[in-house]
Length: 617
Image (cartoon, rainbow, N blue to C red; front, side):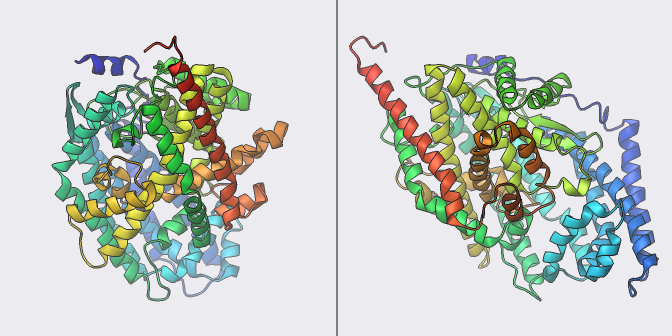
């Protein structure tokens, strides 16, 4: 093992323990839950087939309520099984058994979804009076918002037969393409002078203080993916082609385009998205200035692609590496400053080994938060290597975990919050950590925190909009036919040019390939919700002082409503604001401006120190 790799593993985090859910794929509990889901799907089909939907009478209400109770129990088990399989495959993509079980559980969930479809379709189209009676039960009352949202999309519904066919085909269509991408990502190796390593570990080196390591890791990742540019182009073309055909089929009563479903999934209106993007575009000066300041801090004319995730340079930051225990202590201190209950939650996460942070050869890239529906317990996944960015990422994922934790007593159907609101608690936690470090960390940490602030500004206000621009242009071009790898790279360059300007030394032409988010089968446009979450979270964080002693109950009340309200209604209820206006989004952008100006000030102070007669190199 090289010195660099040895250093990486020295700071790595712990292994998680999921045995409290299932001891393995052959565990009696796992086998029993699989059989229970199968039996539930069969029973639901049988009961629905025996019903007559022609007359909306009390007997039908009662029968559907009973079927819904079976559905609730089955969905909890199915999501639990899927979570376990996904967590196992994320650790090592080469474990054949885990991959097979993951496919089997996806098929199981698909079959259950197909069995439930007739019920959902009927409740989309039934009279308001019947729906009201159906919801007048302890079992079904929590479904109210779910069905309200479903009825918004009734114009895009197909016949029962077509809906079932689409659902059944999905596991062998888009789901299979997404699975292929994950398998490629889990098995590819990046070759560097630090050694040959998986993409997750190589991705960790993009956060190295050593530029040579960052550059080699970035180039190694690009080279590894380049060998699979044709298959990945095939994945993107197939996913988008499938969606275009589906949207065309669903447009018989009302036009459905490539943004209709993402907006429904995000529970925001198109004018809200337009207002946010307009505000970000108005303040592109913030990202241009941030990139110029980052280049100056790095001693360069322009930022290189491998610098975008870099830690603060030695001239303005300590460059310290944190053990996992130190990271947890910092985050606990931050959470405690918000409310003791948040610190106690973190203690539970650590004590129960619900955090995965090891450096492993075939580990999935990135970081995420997942969880188990049966026990209502979250899990955090990361490749932790000790940088301040890793500490911040850990705080981010623990924010997600806290979000699900405060909702653990809420019925299943009211816990399915959209991605736009999912980022609220995560970015809130990152922001709180940055403030705590700036307050208690001393001068050396101030530079690191300020660097992280401008890096975030570039990520959420340039990189995410560039991804959105690329995907929008890709979907528009895809209507004319599949795109080649060269054409996909050209589209990427065009989007990067629009949002980064000329502040990068070169564009990330292969980003369409290296970024998992474009190949996720269940959702498209996995991008704009991040910018939404970033700015919305800053807006919420701004109420921390205003709410004072009422902060914690008001904050958790907002989080608990995220699964049962649209984003617009949530903000109106809890903040008294209107998301549909550009003015709302310009306020958190003004907060970002203060952070950028603070970094500029610190950079000026650092340059003065470095140019002093007694400065040391």
